[in-house]
Image (cartoon, rainbow, N blue to C red; front, side):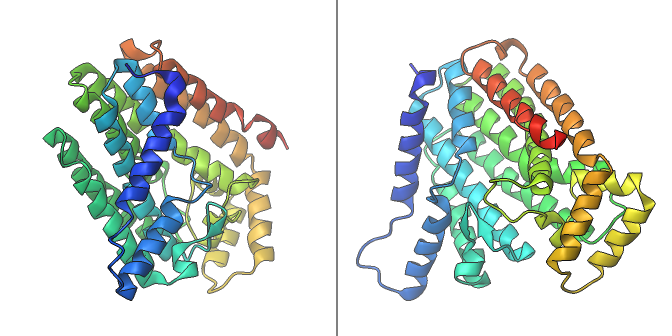
Length: 329
């Protein structure tokens, strides 16, 4: 029987499986393969990795007493798909820092980042081969939906007239779909149809909240392991940026001018960042984040008060509350 207190043991098992999957035969000496291995391990086994997805899978599993073996494979697959998306995003965004270290594209090059990400996607699907066919089929659909959302995100870059509905489509596709799959996969391996439905719905809604929190962290800064104001620098219309530009036509015009520059300087980026904060967009985002979290928790239905889901509720509530002092500054 899975125990909520054994989460560290579960995460250690996931770490071990990641390490094993990213270890090739010692006799293989081709340079391109060794570089891809090093790049994949560089991101996937970084000390700053929070393992939010494996922890969520474990808590879902505790709630319905799902078997640990398939859950560990689900968690590894989630980490590989997530890591692949980060590698690809960093290429698109010209990112330089991830998990308090250089990104793969910055340390090696774009080719290594893209192909290493592709290898991780393949390893993710291969690692699910022993379990329910729906788990693998939905993982494939997850990758497709994440790719569609990433394409939409690329299309709206540099635009200051992006709607909240467009932002939500991207957030659901890039983040909500992943958490939804984690929930549904847990239900599938436990043969629990009700859990598959409720955990999936929670995951989709929570994913939107998670992305909203990430957008807020980018604006507020702090110890998040990434460059502050990356969304402004990368001309990425985040949730608070959309709110701010809707509130201030003058700011909208300034941001448009900034995003038309080839290489905006740090001073201008910081100035725009402060202007966004001055509109109250951070506070508005924080309030909406609370509503998104409450709707996600309500979607747990009959499972909300069970051990595992109760810990999920505490976790996501703490995520919201952690912004209180920061937003007030």
